[in-house]
Figure 1: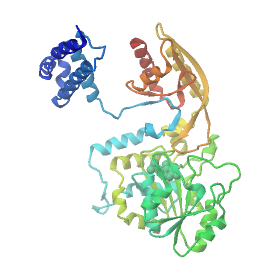
Figure 2: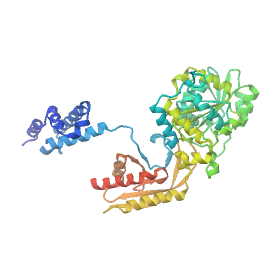
Figure 3: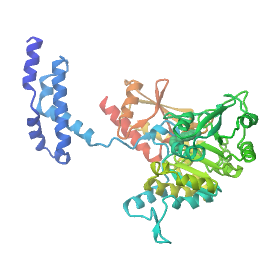
Figure 4: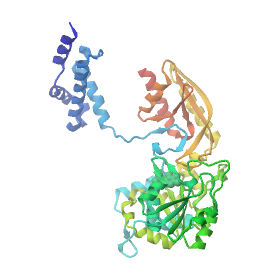
Length: 473
Ligand SMILES: *Cc1c(COP(=O)(O)O)cnc(C)c1O
């Protein structure tokens, strides 16, 4: 049979969508699949076969056109369509605040509060004492002031929003002085100059990339200077011949000329990490105590809470910020607020915070605990029957991530795995597409998993994934 004839024969054998729909109806698997999912799934499988017949794809045999085979593919397609796109994922990268993998895991109490508030009505904007309309921000303001030492505080959707809102409120149509060494771009294309352009403020760059002095700030001050801005160099570091002006000196300068001073801390933390043997990251309390008029930071970076932008500072400025109409567009959602309030409350007791906030727990996890976890996973994988796995324990470094502590190497223990007969790229892809996905990295032909960011209850899931890999390949 020549290929054209063959194609015609195969096309004639290709069943219609209605026929497949009819036989699908008889199978209980499809009982819970809505027609709006089932029909497009059938259509896509049939269309795919038609295309492959027409382009002469070798893999098409009469068997691939059987009802059973088509139905099997429709099941796969329908299952995929019924699975949510946002999936619980295992972070084996060792990057703790991994923006692509959802940044922070919430503490249990934060999750519990989020669930409680989501299922019921709440006093979100209702003042229970006065019996009338209240403010959505008031539930976190007291605790925020308590743990930061600030006079006032509020929260918005994220820190990019917080920065935009502050600049627009404080320095609309006025100049904002920023050091060239601090014109940062963080992931997701947040650039200080761009945000400034979107707010009504005008950027006034001073100094050089590596060195900026107090006199540079002072020389740049003019009548229309509205703000001195300090941006924490969160995801990079300038080393070598460098000079930057401290927040304290800027506060003094601001006081002399009656110009407010703002600090964007980026990550923002209430914990002094140098106590735990890590590099010092300026804390929120220190910035407030130094006298910054406004301090902004993220809720889901080192703080370990939900996505949010937090603003603390002097009451008169915060009052103005709260009245800016842009706040409405950056409004924080009630579920976030519930999780954020619970997270803030944990910081009343630092020891408790470090134990119960996953981000802090992973950051301060002692190396021996990581080693134990690594050996456990190693043993579990070794025990697998007729396994073709080769393992090695490796000393590598984890990272804080989320644009925080860029110079910090956190010594960690990783498990590298090779699978006999399967290339490491195939292993990586299989695990990435597993349910749940496992995200690691490849180094020297090994699939590397950093145990610091793998949760204890995820170890059996990793073993299952390798089992499935060996079964399929
Ligand atoms: C991360 C970061 C931001 C943005 O914070 P989001 O909460 O991601 O919006 C702004 N400024 C700095 C310095 C940052 O590191």
